[in-house]
Image (spheres, rainbow, N blue to C red):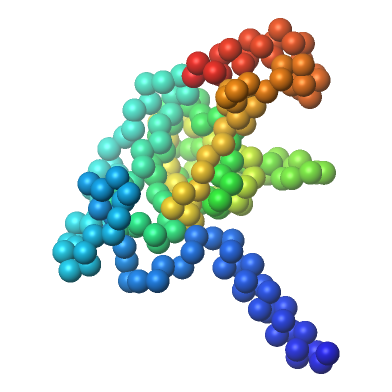
Length: 212
């Protein structure tokens, strides 16, 4: 096999991997979601208006009256349907946080609009490196797809962040909820051994997370 043939095959495989790594490429200009339809079917393209591609309200904060002292406010734009992109506003009171979690189907990019935020992700086995940084207004940080990460507001003022992921359905799995809040519950003896905790502590955590 010639060198050129090997290069061509390598390029083809790379493009194939990229194609399967993200949401499928749309087969039409757009598919504006019909929000009145349970199936979110596409609107008739001849009936769409500029408002189908528009959102107003990003300047309004989310509700941070919760134990996390943080809020996620999704940006709902019907015209984003099938385009492989999701956006949200994140609000943090001082010391507010989003629990450690990961997105199984998307990379996340975070832009600080106001305040300051600590963000970081943990690399996979065997290194488990904590790659984190405190961001200030105007800073941008990328969290690779599928890696456990965390976010918290730092400083004395409220923090506002714009979050975007490259999937219409990125998925979110909170580490603690996924383990201790699973339904039906994971065997407590197993979790006791896996986390080096006594069984009573595990069952207490399962009880708390199953109700939240």
